[in-house]
Image 1 (tube, helix red, strand yellow):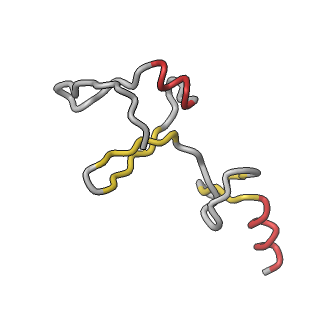
Image 2: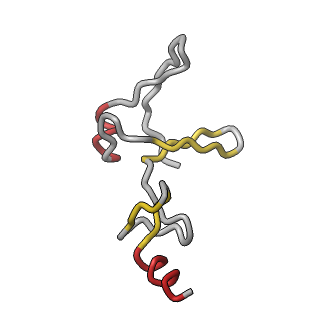
Image 3: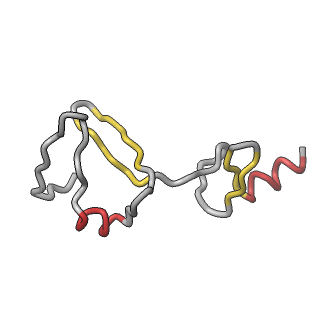
Length: 80
């Protein structure tokens, strides 16, 4: 894990502000979704990316019944 030296206070609604420099570096824009993970006593934020519900790939995705499926898995399902 890389230290940034950035410290932010949590406001009375439990929010923190991600500095613009950090958002630019990570490609996080206004209205983007961020995933929240925990590991022991650490909180991890990651820009959300859709992925295939079957294999986890995040390229060549199509939405089917509100689920994301990659083209490779779609072609495998067509064999069944």
